[in-house]
Length: 305
Image 1: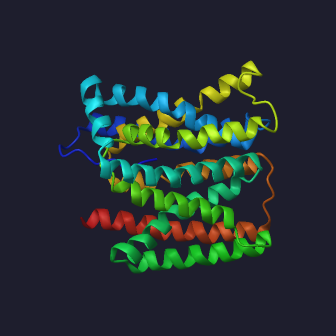
Image 2: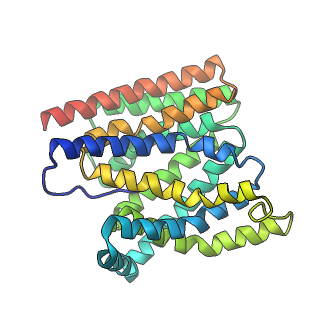
């Protein structure tokens, strides 16, 4: 997911409706991503991550031209290759690489609920980042939300027998990625293209590393080869839908829709029979109550504005 600047003209009711459907569809696709990754359970984690990067590049290139047109698309790509912009996108690529790697590892290790925890915490971490690093004002409901989230993480640590380091790392890498990505004023698909190209050497290294220990799945099995190849479109399509929707709905709507993805991931983890104790349930309830305070404050602020 990447930040998208809103358009200046006010969208019509039909555009807002289409935008809402597109944005909601993006979050639903992200929410069901574990189902796709589960199909790759027999593939080495290193190859899954590497193939996602490799196939993201052509998918993102197609997305650039579909969303912007031929000539504007090339102009966007040229802008992204300017020194400062390129440096920013390379930095964001590093964090999204770690984020993708952690996510793939958690899903393939049957820890989908833990990955959902990370993305439930993400909006609250964004509030904390804004206060700590950008001196943004914080309201009382959001202070309560952060306190409940912190308490929820502590309870989760007791439930697991150790702090949920992987979930916290997943949340942290996403939050840092979002902050860096905000500084790169290029469209989402263009940013994904440059990030994929920047990560290509790492992807090749991962493929060489994995192939040195066992044959790669891509090319050895037709079904797995197709599944690995569609990793690109599976990454690019929801991004395009999100970019379309973000330009046509309010930030308040987007802020509330973002809870769709981790909710669906959570349900998926439960459906897969992952362990979910009473103490772990208490942890999630604390975080959900915190998110309720956050959502209420967001709606209240939007209404006041």
